[in-house]
Length: 161
Image (cartoon, rainbow, N blue to C red; front, side, top):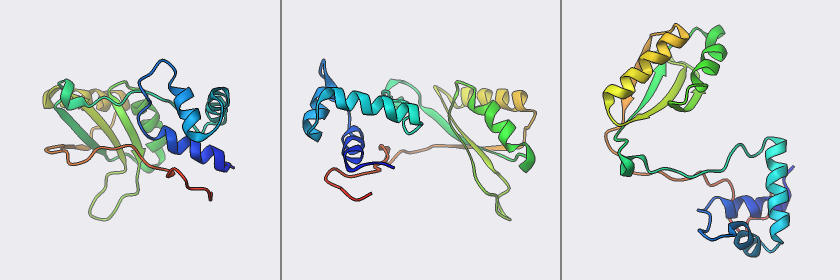
């Protein structure tokens, strides 16, 4: 169970890391603890499986990746875990998740692909089809981006869990 301090740390880490030689020290000062405490808690979050990774968020359009597609796949329900494992192991896939189907929408496995061109995205999807053996999918290309932000799990100052 997360403590109030954990929530304050997570709230502080939801923003961009300060671009300084010791960003965790600045976060620690903001949260009201020592730098070592922040680092130790981050290690614990990782060990406990709460924190998967920390990294830069690339603004893909600004660096030339103009094509991205949400690919929705129709996978037999008893094979979705296997197909999801295979697709998520591919470096081209940035997101991979399952969802329930609906009577008018049979797709149950979704992946996000990013590339410089739509043709490259199509080639990536074709490779996923080859790897998994499933080729019943639809590609939904983005045409405009209105918002892209980090998830906000906690707000600073929020004490209740």
